[in-house]
Image (tube, one colour):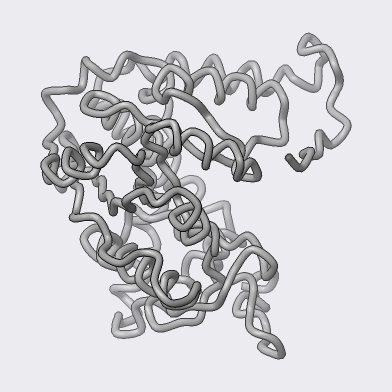
Length: 313
């Protein structure tokens, strides 16, 4: 497994460099216990502050949304950019809740749909690969999912070792195992043992790990690992959606039927099918997606960056 860089962090967690991290952890633990209405207010305020101060992220978000929703007028686009920041601000408090509290206290806020599809997949006895998506509700969605089904999770380790320890311990209370995204053998082993593994393939990890496939009509570097895992395990691949509902108080988790004949003929075809599902989920609540990252960072050979004006926007 590839060793991740630690960026020369001190060995002792008592070092002053970690004091801001300890403060952030304390705030997340406290935020998890706030009344629901106050969480929404604080999360929206965090999002609004990030919108006003985060010039570069605002440009990235706007560029992504312009590419993916070219039909939007200027006023609609500006409104969606702002709503995206607000949703992701709320997502910080949702993440704190998912990591720091027992998800059973939220059961009354959750509706599960399509459980019969997951039951049918699990009954095959081959393990299951669940396709999740990087919504602002990601970690709370994982916690709520654990109310119904056990699962492992594939994740990207954090560079800060203190926050990495906090995050991994929290996720291990939610999931059966937290697997480094570079540990393909670990993912395959867990699935072959009959486990369900939650995997989110909707980020740009560079040319070597990807093929180019359309995403909202734009060529996007799309991970090949989904096909590899499915091919190596024979596990059913389950599309999974999760959203905060318009009332901002309840959540919907929904399984769709497992992909048929997956993997297919080639990696581009498979990535196109995965991207089409992700588009379908995003269109339901586009503001809840993590548009703040450069989804189209890696470009086909010879094509200029789509974010080239980000430093001057």
